[in-house]
Amino acid sequence: MTPETLPLAATSVFRAVMVTAGWRCQCTGQCGQAHAKTDRRCPREHDSYAGKHGGPVRLMAAASDPTLTEREAAALPADRLRAWCPGCFTGTRRSRRTTEPVADQGGLFDL
Image 1 (cartoon, rainbow, N blue to C red):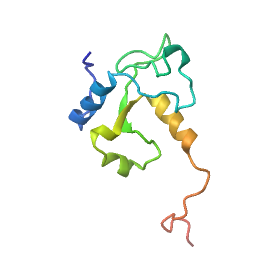
Image 2 (image 1 turned 60 degrees about the vertical axis):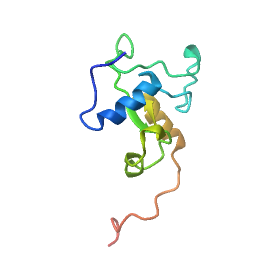
Image 3 (image 1 turned 60 degrees about the horizontal axis):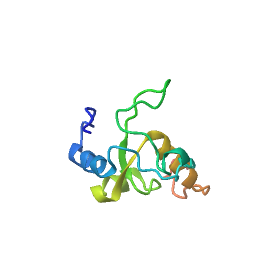
């Protein structure tokens, strides 16, 4: 399967991650969903539809550990990335978010 919708940048990295994943989300429950009906793996595939009322699914190549900052994730090689659907990626980030505030605000609220 070679979907037509590819990102504008880093296409070779995106394609390498998607080929490894079989163009399917690699979440195995980290998002909080059991994915019990689909062998414990998210059923979302790139360029397929999310359901009767859902739009097309656009997978993303993102860090295996979604708690990394965007800067840290951008520096990772393809073998440290995985395919995520937006719902699983957001759910995983939400479930792993710490409740401690960030100490350094860069003087944003200094008077």
